[in-house]
Length: 470
Image (cartoon, rainbow, N blue to C red; front, top):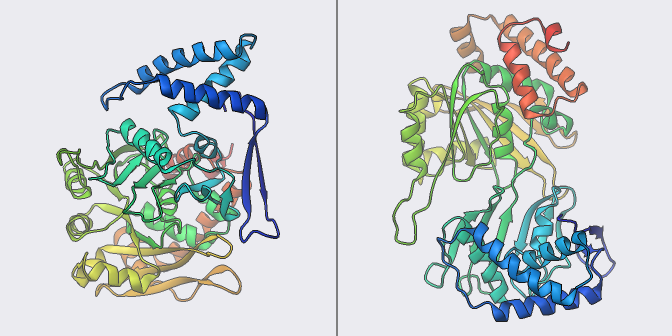
């Protein structure tokens, strides 16, 4: 990280209730850190300029960099270029960056970074160990507020006493929520949900036992034949990851429009894909673009498939389900813990769709996170009948930790027979072939989303499979 060498240790001490996540910068001595802090204070005291939201961040950084070089040259006159560059980056990080939070942002094993206030350490959520306390402390509430201001400024947003809540994102795509005291009564907060550097693929899900081969083949068959799917689950259960996995199976000769609050999806680069993002209004309340705006607009863009980050309100749900009924294959996520809750969420306020409209959805996939071991699994897969009722086809068997088939699909088989002409035996034979291909993909370590996109492209052009693996 800019020549700064960081060591990370995760340990559970007897006196601690949770494991600790400790970082140490190994190539900056304690004495040097004291001098750098003195330089930082001298820099802050000498900097009287107030930042304008329209200032180019790059220009600000260059201007500050030149001033810092002058200060460092005074204190470290004999430092070589490599050492000087490292010291410059460190001081810049501490002054106009996010300090040691930037070190945490570089760790791909972390999913969340949380600042609760200046009286307790920064917390992180590790994909293997769950919640951990770090050894990073913020000196005061002003520093937390300063970080929130920096983040907001980069995307043209403000957080103030009158507007103490802010949703934003970093340039890396990481989602940020910030609050100011006294709204958060213990102090100012920042919550950063990190953007996955490597998007989840179907082979990742199979390797992690998130999904069974039979379930994956069934989903593939549904997506291939343009059947609409809703993905439900609780917070951090893997809904968006599953949505990304579904997109692995899209046909390259179709136009895909995705709508999200913050870009999280990464589709294969051989697809005809137009991603769109919502936008909050500016401080004057103007310029906002809602999910509803984008869903309505997507219908004017001749989409073959519509992908929606999350359904929250009635109007956007109505438009999306109307799109399904008029022949647009649609895929979306929804907060609900199981299939029954999914039906209830869709048919009761604030969404409140007529139950008969739900028949436009062919499959409901429910994701689940086990809070004890932090593992994500597919909990249920269900079909929706003509009355809007759910028929659970597969369900996670807790004692065996595997997805088991509990009944044969009826509506799904009828729909596939209607639109493809395939018999029941041909449908199951196709599922078996897809399972074989998926096993080959896992064995061959096909876990790059773009490689999988090319593989699916060749599959859909009916080339012999031996040509695919050549």
